[in-house]
Amino acid sequence: RKAGELALLRCVMCAGFYPNVAQIQRVTGGKGGAKTFCVSAGDLDRCIVHPGSLNARQLADMQANHGWLLYHTKVKTSQVFLHDSTLIGSIPLLLFGGGQLQMAKNRRTIVLDGALRFDGQREE
Image (cartoon, rainbow, N blue to C red; front, side, top):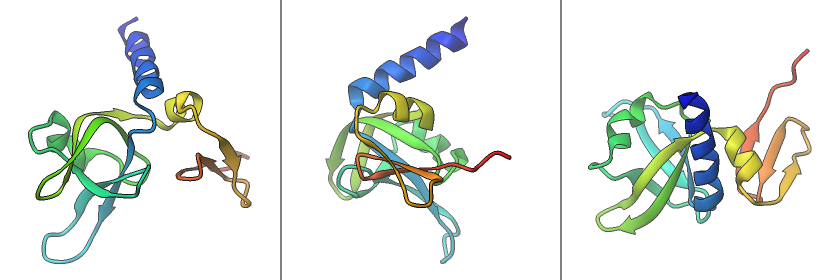
């Protein structure tokens, strides 16, 4: 029962916080190895989760290029930080994101509001 309530809560949060969405991305290479960061979907700002956030400690474990974060505020100081963030799945974004859905030419990608790309695989 609790799992269903959590899923419903994430859907409601998605409807309320959209378009404050960022995609989790990871870049490998260089001296530091892999670095995880986020890209804000609305303005394509490169940002990171605020170090005081619980998500900052878990960001390396989140799935890159398929993980999404909803956030309440974005603040620029020394870097652009996301405050009050929560991990969200693709399905709630597609259903409750409140934007225009389009199918890409390859027929395997759905684009939400011209910015958020969701890649799907054909099941056979």
